[in-house]
Image (cartoon, rainbow, N blue to C red; front, side, top):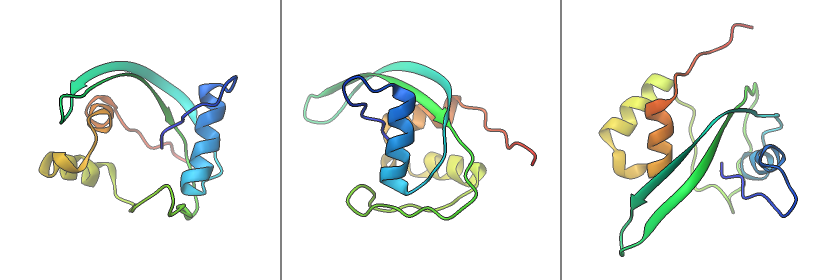
Length: 109
């Protein structure tokens, strides 16, 4: 989800809030890393942003807000990476950067 912090709201607090607003997920994400990217888009637009990446564990069923989320599905990391490779146009530039540069590890419970 995208954090879109409010004035005087930390990125962490905004991430927690937006995860709930977008996906109905009650979790406290942990900061992983941040990166800067610049890419050309269609219609001569340029996207130049700092992205903060957070991770969280959630053991439940999301309740996606239809005003925020068009569709979602649960897939393994392997399935996600394969789909990004096969259908890169279905994913945003920033999301592809995260998938390409993040090493996912599942914590044993």
